[in-house]
Amino acid sequence: MLLKWEIKRFEALSLNELYQILHLRSEVFVVEQNCVYQDIDGKDQKALHVFGIYEGKILAYARLFKPKDYFKKASIGRVVVDQSCRDKKIGHILLRESIDGIREHFGESQITISAQLYLKKFYESHGFIQTSEMYLEDDIPHIEMKIE
Image (tube, rainbow, N blue to C red; front, side):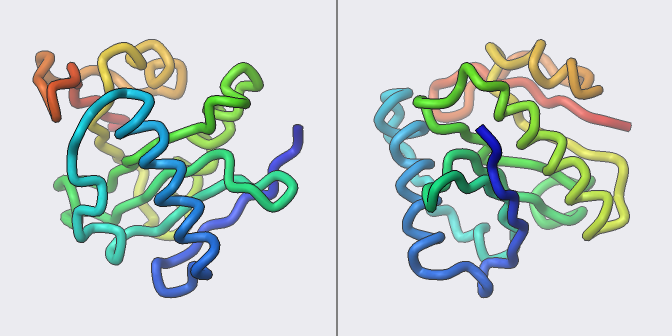
């Protein structure tokens, strides 16, 4: 499965792209993870949006922030892959695209994330190291991780 990758500012997203992004985030973070929280948090307008499309459908997504727009350092958030294709290693490609996007668009190599604890090894495989104790974010165990 070969996805076409895009990185766009909020204003450049088409209505269909924005709808698909919000649908995917809601499907995974609210419904699948059974977590009622405010996904639309007013930060999408500051972010760059990286997403992978296959046959017209967005299957992978993350948002990228320059330093001080979310954390002190550049950051990646809302990392999500459609349930139908999680066995295809698309998450690894998405994270590489996101890291590369931060380097290319922001000129930054230091990145901070708030990672769900169960994904620690996934993020470590991309060079992130744990920099905090476990904490709850929307009742889900998280840890802060960084690439320095």
